[in-house]
Length: 283
Ligand SMILES: NC(=O)c1ccc[n+]([C@@H]2O[C@H](COP(=O)([O-])OP(=O)(O)OC[C@H]3O[C@@H](n4cnc5c(N)ncnc54)[C@H](OP(=O)(O)O)[C@@H]3O)[C@@H](O)[C@H]2O)c1
Image 1 (tube, rainbow, N blue to C red):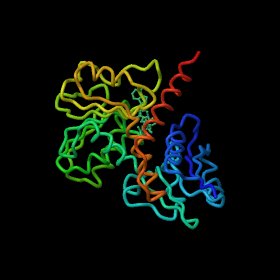
Image 2: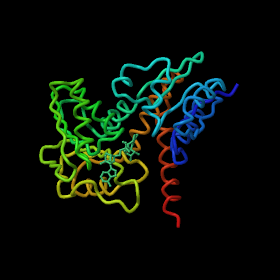
Image 3: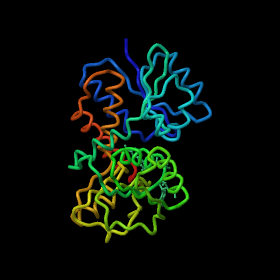
Image 4: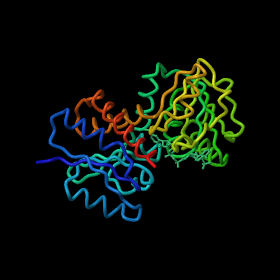
């Protein structure tokens, strides 16, 4: 019998996950489907019930449902509970178990660029859901210094207060995005949406980027102006495609208890991202 997996979000049309997971299932010789399900927030509870009854075995969860899904699950893994967001659901015997693989995805993506989990002076641009998962992951490294810079500074302050509740002694500060200074930063993470549109510029002044800095842009649909500028200025830099890859690979491991075919998944993602970008730029 064909096994069914999928991703829920609203909207969901531009998700690259179906291409990645479909390629993985094929490589693993699995008779399985991965479908995008567009779920308006008000229909989340009945849709989850329906998908469970239909025999769906696993789901990814994307914006704007990552927080809303929490109270609807039978169990939430401690990491996802701490972050306050779920991006993966495993469904076994009609029981729904929530996980968050975004942090692990980020860590694996950074390690691929040569970063090692040691005390780091890091700046995160943005204070939304992706910034929250990134900040959570980095603040787990004792001795690190973290700056959260956001356009609306109140949101950055809220994120810092939240982090300090679980890491009371951590070195974490909030600043307005317009005042961010990268003098001491070893790691810069863009978790804003700046760079998603073809017309976007950089979220920070390019002159602040310098050799030795690792720059990771969570935006994954294109090679962003930030990544291009960072490379020109001698930084190691990449866009968020690798984080998408590793969070997806971690989801697949949770659903199937098997090693994910990373190379196949990466290739499928790169192809899907390129075709998505071509469609977006078509007049
Ligand atoms: N690679 C991956 O696996 C992965 C995973 C998750 C997310 N992402 C990407 O991460 C990005 C953020 O996603 P999210 O879910 O965190 O979104 P979100 O919760 O909506 O947060 C958006 C963030 O972008 C900032 N922002 C929006 N427009 C801006 C502008 N013109 N100038 C400066 N800042 C601006 C917002 O600042 P304000 O608070 O001031 O509005 C906020 O901090 C998206 O590009 C998403 O695709 C990638």
